[in-house]
Length: 135
Picture 1 (cartoon, rainbow, N blue to C red):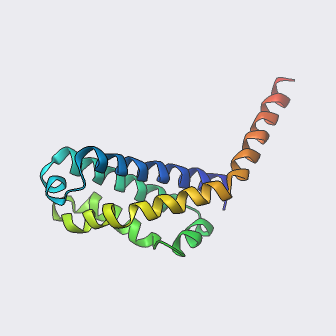
Picture 2 (tube, rainbow, N blue to C red):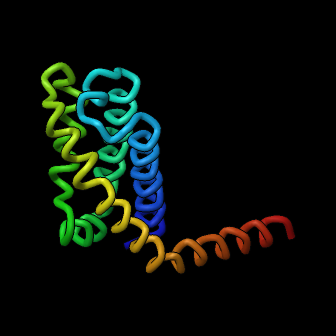
């Protein structure tokens, strides 16, 4: 895993939190989800963004993710949203929202916590490179 993967996991976790905030705001009700375009579209776009980031993960990071969550399924949902928007099954999306997003958020938070040293190392290197440049 590398610095970029940790940043992707951090961003994916933030997107998961955005979905949780949408559920809190609009309500954990399937009928509301299906009938409120703002709610539905907000969640879809966020799931789409998650799929984009999962697709950018290194092979090593995807291997780690695949131990708990099948990355190819996350990417497949992203592709379905992008290319078959009108043919989406609302129940499948709702199942992702209510049954899988919290697991993904927990996983991402753990990865960020366990690999935070990669972020710190990069920051130090970056600072050192600027210091050398200014001398």
